[in-house]
Image (cartoon, rainbow over all chains, first blue to last red; front, top):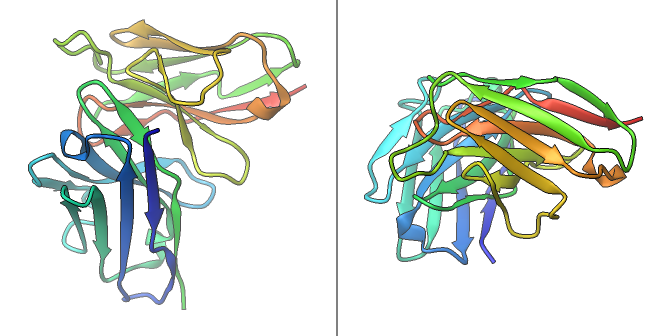
Length: 115
Length: 112
């Protein structure tokens, strides 16, 4: 069974840092383009970042320069290093994967940025 | 960015009756490999979204067969053959053809 399990969320002060992780199983991880998607409380879904199979990366303008996405294909793991966090980064963060013929969506981990 | 438009935004349904949600994309989601990069998600109250349908018509693991996806190009439909009480929540369509991933506004299904 394909599974993505995100972890690492929590309460952090404005300006602080947090690293999210996503453990993948049941799929050929290095075939998948992996994304982070977030959802602020009561709001819709918003794309955050992508890492392609070869490790190249893309970011939404709202997080560029503050967030870093990375992957470890040997460990089937995805990461999101978040720095200089702001109140507006408060959201449920989900890891999502797509290949040429497959897709998976993990349960989210909640990040709350507040003093 | 590809714009995803859903209708209706609210869908009251009687248990046992069918339901249908439409999704339109601003760009064709059909790639040269024959796949439509369109997915459907369900977010139940108080939960994370989870994947129902991917590549336009493929049910994700564990999804009941009362859920089906159809369509191609720019017009897609999610159908529930017989709605059950556990199907309440917000349904989103999404495209995975281009980055950024983009999502519909969501359709709230409620039981009458």
